[in-house]
Image (tube, rainbow, N blue to C red; front, side, top):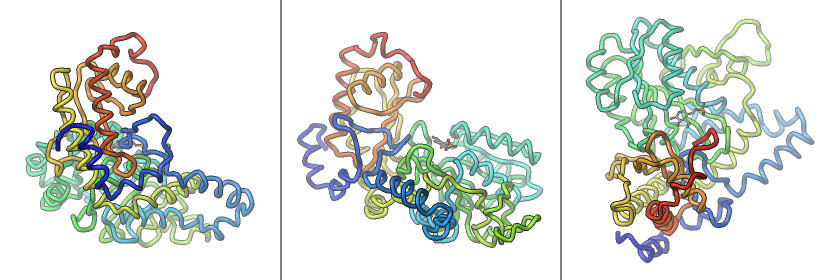
Length: 413
Ligand SMILES: Cc1ncc(COP(=O)(O)O)c(C=O)c1O
């Protein structure tokens, strides 16, 4: 692939997913490379939100629980999400935040391996995952060993007699590296342990095969590549073989076998219904249901194929245009080892990203030196990628990013 705009336009002309761009409402003059943080607004969602507010809530009021089937929304949307992560129906529930689902899933997983005291966690895990792992360990009297992913196979082997759960992210949120989910899951099983995966950066961009790869439990958010919107509910997947013994700590009334019997004692629902907790954030949940339509129609394999090609084109353009400007690629070149994002290192990542955003190219940074560019395949063109790298070249070579207004401000990076 030659790193120029003519090549980008040729690639766009041959792109079967190009028409999906119109299904997203993006402002003019913006190149949005941040679906790894918050997916862009699907164009159909505002009308859905209007319907939820005015007709379902405004007119039907509590009748909507039955008439719009609000009651089953967590399971219904769960099955839609399940299909995107390779899970057969009846194993995935949508609701709550990722942080809450991590607590529920990790505690539940550890309780499936009583007597085993070790949790192995990815040392590069997103912070909330490590915080929750420590808290769960304190509650259950376990020990967490946080190890770099490259050392995980050896650590699994070392702790095999006492290992309860291996808890890692399928895709590293900083580097975009995709780990060997099937291989590590199999290694955990060989040691008699379970594998719990955080799929936040994998779902909707990488074809995860939860059932086929024998994943025990998984959690993930829906506001990144799944497009559910800010604060959209997360999900929990638990393989059907574990349901009968799955003792989750958050025993809310929606997870009861007979919720409307209002019984004083908890009796978990059979199947994945026990992973429901309390009333979910319905407005968000129903917006998520509408948001999934473009991804469902495009198909995860086609999305992954384009995202991989966009990533390769990004890296090719970066190598040609950013040479000598202080950038180095962090994400693996091999698309089979990447998720949906490309990360570049630069010593002045914060002001460089701030100056880039001022030009309408939106990515983000993670301290101290990482620039992240999420490549949402349904709304981005190859021309967008070329223009973004060209803008990065201009920002870095002109030195404007050194101006005081690009110094850190605001909480969110
Ligand atoms: C890998 C990973 N896990 C968890 C979270 C966040 O959890 P929550 O949805 O509770 O904020 C993120 C947020 O970006 C993430 O990247």
